[in-house]
Length: 387
Image (cartoon, rainbow, N blue to C red; front, top):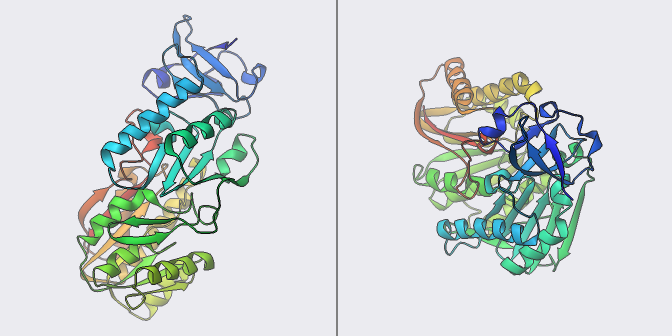
């Protein structure tokens, strides 16, 4: 039998947000079994939805539905099939995309990425972990992948009281998946590196930038596996990629070889802040720079410190771009909203003593759907700036 939970505050839920915090509850959440399903009601005992509860997490409940559905394999099949139908409309003929984007697909705590015949699954919350076997069986049935990887190494699992793990659940990774993005091939290692092995969320932005930059010499900073760099190198530009990870630099070089672009790009291991200081000191100038750093903001409490880092690195980059040159700069921290991001870029331009024109402002790809009622789903900001 599903237990009932009563709320003393409902503004967030009634506005369409699926999160319920511990201080929204009328009583302590400690009395409920972690990971169990609960029915949610307001103070007048009106039904609001069904979700899973974790009394050990700051977000006590995450809603799965606002109707009286039975949360079983049939419910999950409908949710996953709906997400696949949406991707089918957007990415017909594309073998790689994000299949499930947590709250964006009404399955909070679940991430699924598809790399050709390999899928990578992340169970970020205890509630989703409790449905793990059902979800894996459904994904296997609906997608028929040759390889299934469980990539449970997100820090959010620790906040949910879950352990970190990486598991090859099906198939073999003797031959790593290769994906194609607008004519560029990438090898993806789903057990290593950032996120689930690749940054699918920047795909549309990389393609858009390749339509703006048709040559010249530039930098791909925090280059990871070289995705931005290779798109521009394919267009005839010469790009130097910089990353502090030896594994990332090695993968970027391998991807350059896969595409026959080793003459058009180079990748070096270096701290990006130190690298930029050296370039400023040597008065080196570039036609374009890509800045795609990891999330500097891991919590709202560290926002001020992170904004300082974003501003500093953008200021340094703006100092070494030629007049008429372009910077493509991003932030993947949802704590940094659009207006804050643009404000720090204005401050960076002022400190660099440059005039900046906003050529384009972009978001994450459409396979990472943004819910207007859930600001946290809008996490990626990307600005193309002409100096």
